[in-house]
Image (tube, rainbow, N blue to C red):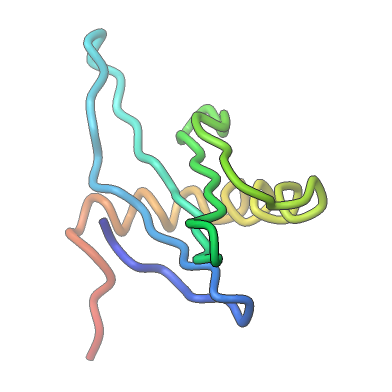
Length: 90
């Protein structure tokens, strides 16, 4: 998993390497996760479909909407990270 950003509320955003379905289709997952006293709030999106494949915890519908926007607008970047093995820094 490749770390993307940590938001001020503790939500960590990570993305996977490229994965392949049985039919050969490539996909990645982008995970939003926030530690809480009881465990974690978690939302996992699959790209390029933008489907939520896991939702657990107490993220609000408004937070989910924001996360979906991040995933949609950043899809090309997330795929670039996956193809290049992570974020390259100077």
